Figure 1 (cartoon, one colour):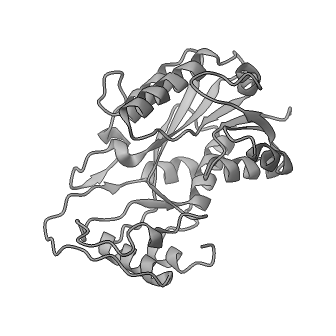
Figure 2 (cartoon, one colour):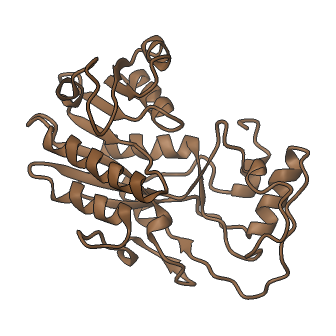
Length: 275
């Protein structure tokens, strides 16, 4: 069987370790970065580097060449501004219009932020992608799903932790933090990479998956313990009894991929030496 090529658009916190894991698994991997200094990092990891900038393509590289792959992983995080949202949609549109016929599978990295606080457990059916959605990510999910000749799988990740993202720093020292009893919806970097590898191995295309650890401690319990582990001042939470929340259900992912989380218990994960 011919070696498959995977292009990872965005080799940052998640994209780089994913690309490195794919190289180790025997794939030919192309990786993009906007930082010239990172080109050597990619090369040293066995990743074919591409210096890309959007919405205009950098003259130093060829977007079409980068997109020549069996699978494209679209892993660019949107910026939280109106201008940033517009640029994000323009970037996605530019990528989709330049897709060669060879690239028939897309892994689109989305977020569980697409779900409102429904005060209950939520599944993938609780947020439907559409062209006129007020949610940027749901509009973009729809664009990817409607791309001609493409089989797309959407992965909605929960809050990200692991690597250099230790949750102990997120709220340390803050005063009057709201929602102490709200459940936490998070996922460790190792599980992010594991989930994406599982989708590739199972060729689970045309799906939408939630990806979040199955345990959901309260914000107060989790962030207090996380700060204490780093020797930082724990956040001070308001004494609120009313909670606005959602609990992300990832059962569909676990069943379809037969996936077992590396870190299913977030409280136990805090004490792991991987941090």
